Image (cartoon, rainbow, N blue to C red; front, side, top):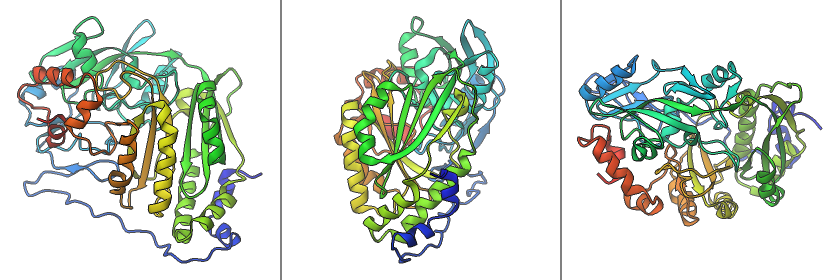
Length: 466
């Protein structure tokens, strides 16, 4: 048994040779995708998202330092006004020809009400963890990436995993919303409840959420375990693992017959710090890409090589505070589609997705991620009305990702999936109205708060049927 880091440092080529393969495909790195011009014809600077697929040339860039500045800007800025966090959304939520606003100037914990933290929404999730820990508190859960702003995370229903744990917005107990008219609405489950349930997942379409009161939990240590096993074994044990562990998720790796499993459970054991996971995960993806390049012509050889490379990897463990373990750095860029399915449809959908990729897309090498999320009541939450199982398919940022729409999305929709608001999908207003019981309720609140449609860029107009 050897460590994952050691085996990956050896590279894939030697394993390919041991599996009997030869080099039939070019291993040359693909060129960078074409980049838009850095300045448009009016002299406006380019804005581009993390993966590079969304971009725009805003006429104004706003960086308010107070809630009153946010409210004033919403009244006077060039429409459409859009707010940007870390740019980790893959959909067209942010691009605007009008005003682009960052809330980086409204960050940090503003105060406490008992064990609930009052937090500015420009705060990045990666900074919120240690800030809460100073008071012995923590967020109940975290997504697999923590670079996002709190506002962006709640606006798109960003989530972690765990059958008893909701998405981040489900822990909001109060929020303050600056509307396009410049009004500040403070709402919760009793005060302006319709605005509260609409705003918690609102895609920045109602105005700007400046501050939230967030429920927290005790800052406990978690015991993290990561191991690789055959695909069939993971599927057979997945439901049991979701039931037994605080957090469970797994990554099914196409063309390998393997899954990487991750669990987190509370513990009082002494800390065992986590290793350099970003470096190791980058090496893992590079090894999978090499296998794709070398053996993409033969699925059996590719699977044999992958099992030789990864099959005997030693499990990894770490013990530390949850905010240090639940999220992972993702230095390798990608594009992503994620749908949230009824739990009893999740694993069947995975089987179809895996079969479709292995039959038609030998270029895919990124793992497929599966998680579970508890129900909540926000009107546009994908988890409204019942728990959901998420299924996320990734494509390397230099590779074609259009297959996500033509090959993957029909499978996920057939199984009753709702799209992640920040991930690629092709659903329009009639499709979404059929999936969300409170769709028309949300549209009515949107019309009331933004009658002049100042927050709607072209993407949101299409999404809401405006």
